[in-house]
Image 1 (cartoon, rainbow, N blue to C red):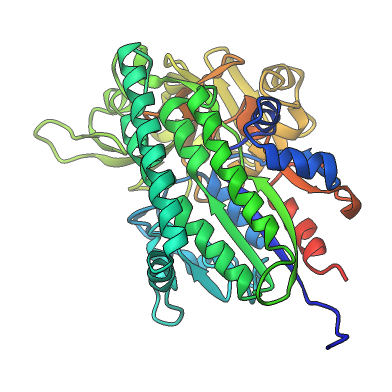
Image 2: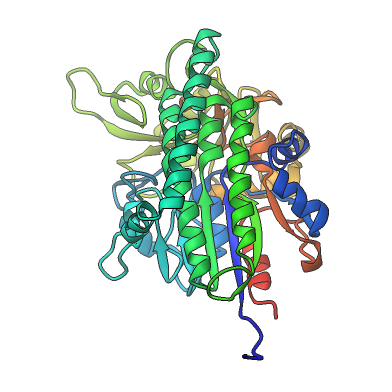
Length: 487
C-alpha cells in the first residue's frame, strides 16, 4: 500500500443567473436540500458579491476563468474594427476576435477541464452548448466522445429518460398554465429551457462526473438551466425555483465523488453564480415600438439594424450612415458603424446634435451613458449627471436608486472606458422592482439595479474568503486560485 498522500483537486460548479437572494429563498423553501446540508453540516457559507456591469455571463465568466473581463461590454456587441457582431451561444463569433483577449493570462482550469463554458480555458473542453469557438484543429472538442459515452451508459440513460420526460411535462404544463392565465412567457426561452434542462444539463453533469473520475486537477462546469427558466417564466415563478432541485442533485452527485472517484483525487467543491435576474417590462410596452425603430425615426437618413430585432433603411436613398444596435437584456449598445473608433460626447454632439438627449427622454429608457475624458456622463430626461470622481451630489442621488453609488459609478466608468462599448450605452428604466428590457424575456439582466448585480459564492468558512469588497467577478479569480493551490 502506498503512503503517498492523495492528490488535491478543485471543482467549480457555476449556476448561471442565480442571485444570492434567490438562493436564500430556494433554501428556505426546500428546493436545495443538499446545499443546505453543506451550509449546516460541512462549514459552507453563501457569500454575497457584486458581479459588476454589465451583469452578463460573458463578462462575469471571463473574469472568473481568466481574471480579466476587459472589453467585454455585454452578451453581444458590435466590433467596429472587425466589422462583426460578436455573440455567444449557437453561431458564436467570439472565436474570430478571441486573439485580442486574455493575452498573457493563465486560466483557472489550466491542465484541467472546462465544461460548457463560453471560453476555451482548460487542457480539455468537454461537452457544452455548441459554441463554435471551441472547434479548432489544434485543440478539438471532446464533446462527441462525451455524448457517445453518455448514450452507452445504461444507468445514466435510464435517469436521463425518466427525468427528461418529467421535466418536459412540467415545463409544458407551466407554459400552458401561463397561457390560460394570461401570464407573460418568453416563448423562445421556453424552448431553450426545455433544451437545457432535458439535454444540456444531463450531458454537462455526465462530463463533470467523468472528469472527476479521470482525476483532472481543476474542473469548471457551467449549468444554464435556471437562467433559461428565469428568462422564460421569470425569476419569481414557482416553476423557476423548482428547477433548482435538479441542480441541487447535481451538486450532491459531484460531492459524492469528492473522495469517491476512481482516480483517488480529493476534490474541494465551490459553487458560484455569475449574476442574478430581475422581473422585466418589455420596452415595446410603451407604444409597440422597439428602440431600433425609435432611433431610425430620429435618424431617418441612416440604416439601422437591431440585432435580435428589425432593420430599417431610408426610403429610396443611399444611407448617410449605418447604426448597429445590440441588446443584452436591459442593456443596449448603439454603434455608429461607419465611424471609426468610439465617439465621445463632443463628437456625438457635433455629428448628431441632441441625439443622446432625445434617446434619454424616450419612455422606457432609464439612462444613457456617453464617453468623455473625465469618466463620462449619464443622461436622463432630468439632465446630465457626470461620472467623474468625486461624484457630484446629483449623480450620487441618481445612482443610489440602484446600488451603492460609489461602487456603481466605478463599475460604470470601467464599462465606459471600453473601446468596444457603444457610442451610446442605453440602460432600461428600473423602478426598484422591475427593469425595462430590450429583449423578449420575462426575467432579465445585463443592466443595473436589483438582484442582477448580486450573485453568490458558496465556499468553506475555513478558507477565509472575504467577498465584502468584491465589485467585479474578476476579483474571484485570485480567490479560486488560492483554494486550488492550497496544500
